[in-house]
Image 1: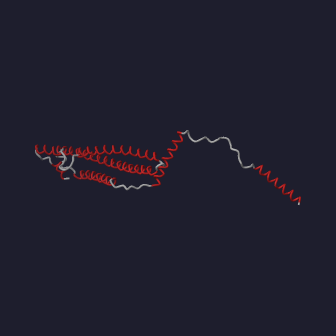
Image 2 (image 1 turned 60 degrees about the vertical axis):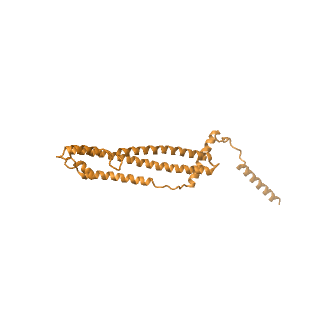
Image 3 (image 1 turned 180 degrees about the vertical axis):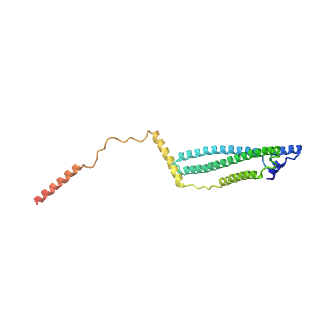
Length: 233
């Protein structure tokens, strides 16, 4: 906060000291990168991670093709391919989170740099209006810096959250179900290439069960035979 106070309270300096001070303000401080350098590096990191995303997506497609290729013929190889696919998907998810964090940090840094330039211009205006604004309101600057610090804390928490280790935990039943789906897709494609399932005959097949009328006629005949037998006795 002392640097900001010096920025707005240096109106009594001579012309030479004012010129040297103005030059020093536009250079980065000792031991730290300038905002432009930091923004440039963040953009390079975004490009690198984007390329890694594309690579992982291609690898995932390859592992899916490998799982389909082996299917039930080599279930062990198919399951291994699906496990590799799961690990690649986890890396892809982590990169997505990292990219979001980097983008947030870059935007925060750009905004901070813009705010710094605005404050510098406000300082020059304050010097020209010494009678009106002899001293800047430090409380407002404190509030602004506090907001920036809070946003940096949020970005740091996100970075720590996505950088945590991931254990290799796979549900065997889920992998088997996914393998079964792949096999079903291959079966459906094979049936389509063969012309589909054979058609069901439309004509009604003859029934082997005797009709109700026939059964009733047999019962009546049996009753007549029993009646005749009783008369004979």
